[in-house]
Image 1: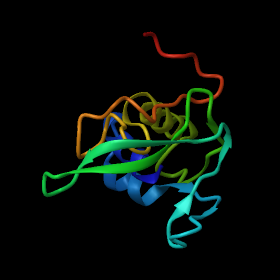
Image 2: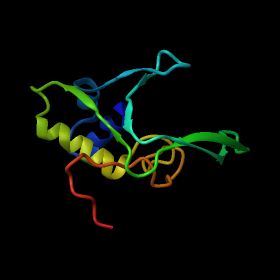
Image 3: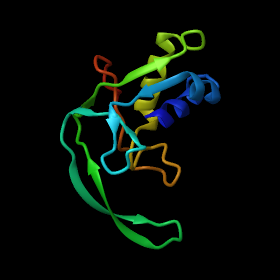
Image 4: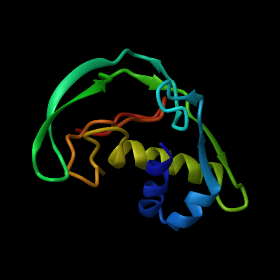
Length: 132
């Protein structure tokens, strides 16, 4: 979530370094296996385990298991931000742009390793759905 907010700042007209220093997605807890990794809890929807082919850095193929959340999932995201640098509307714009074009997780459009699968996109509750 944090990296997506920073990346979205580029498209929202902010300096990415400013977003990195002044906007923070607060974690709800830590990963059970890697206790240094913060998580944001998904409050609606259950993941489905999916195994897919993936390309390793050396070009070889591998099978990876991923959790997939189907449309309808929800999360309550808490954001702390420096109000001297960002307005509430500015932070909402970051979330909107992140949900519209950046995404979260594997297969997102903004993936550095691929063109993405279009997964991980979202909208803010109450925001109209994007036209298709």
